[in-house]
Length: 197
Image (spheres, rainbow, N blue to C red):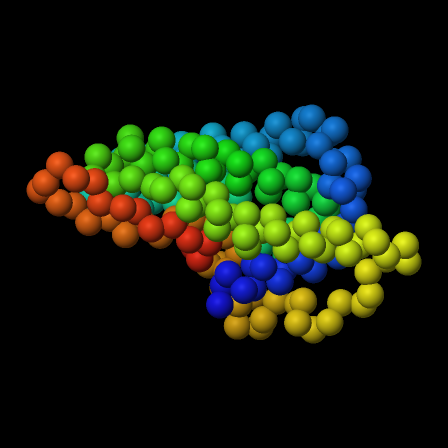
């Protein structure tokens, strides 16, 4: 359900933007640097601090740290658009953050827990299918219509039951970590159904 919401949200955002509009905000280096710093550096540091004061049990500690390492809210551009914000910048930032997430989450998991691993290929594939593909389709349709995209249908708007749910807005990993006494690593299942930005 959440994956479908993200897919349709990214498609609708693509219908309202052009490639040029998405690239343009990246030229604002100070804003881009602050946004990346907040997501990639400050959030993980805050999560690390929270695991120390007071000390948390191991499963909670691992989940919180993984949550913090997963930068990028795949549904954020749609919410930014609804709020009349800069959706183009939100899309551009999302693309960078998701690329960072695919690259650093497997490394972070190895450091956080020796009993777990992330399938980087599956993570990248899921993000491509529910984020990049619908966005690209929307941009393509927009580019082929000189008059712009047609009025958005109600199907393109967030479902009321999801609009207020924090979990529908963000990307994280579901850390289904099972500790084994053997030397084999237990898999960490990944999916776009969580809470993080």
